[in-house]
Amino acid sequence: MLSASGARVLGSMNVKVSAAESPLVSIVDDDASTRKSAQRLISSFGFRAEVFASAQEFLESGRVKETECLILDMRMPNMDGLELQDLLGSNNYRIPIIFVTAHASDDQQRRATQAGAVAFLRKPVSEQALISAIQAVLRQGRRDENEHRDPKSNRPH
Image (cartoon, rainbow, N blue to C red; front, side):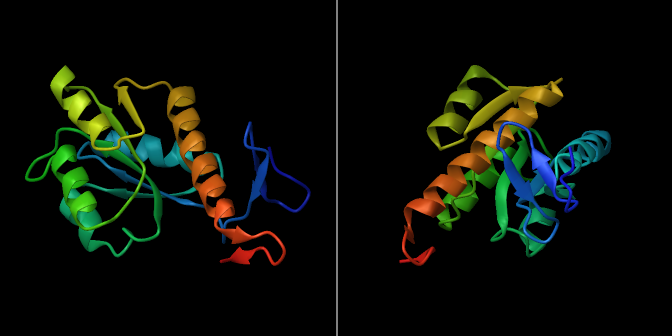
C-alpha cells in the first residue's frame, strides 16, 4: 500500500518508509534465483535489498555497517553461513541474521541460534514467514534505537 506521499506503508509495522531512509536488508545466497526472488519480495515491501553471491562478496561490498538485517544461506562454497556469522560477531558487528536454508542439521540450527540468529527458516520459505521475520527484526531495531534517544530532543544521548 502506498501513502499519498508515495512512501510505502508497511503492513503491521504501521511505519512509512521512503526510499532514502528505508532499512537495508542484505541477502547472501549462492543460488541466483533465490537471491533474485528474495530481493524482489523485500523491495516490494519498501525496504532496500541488496544481494550477494557469497560471504566474501558481502564482506567486500562496503555494506556491512549499514545492513540492518541479513538474510543468510547456511551452505555456500568457501565460507558458509555459520562462518560468516562467527566472523561478523568476532569483529563486533551485531547484525540481526535470519538464516534461510534447504540443508541444515539440528546442530547447525542450534549453533546459529545460540550465536544470536533471530530466525531460522527452511526452504522453501513462505513469503509471509520471511517478511514477518524481517519486520520483527526491524521493529526491534527501531525500539532499541528509540531507547537510546533523549525524549526531549529526539536525538541520541
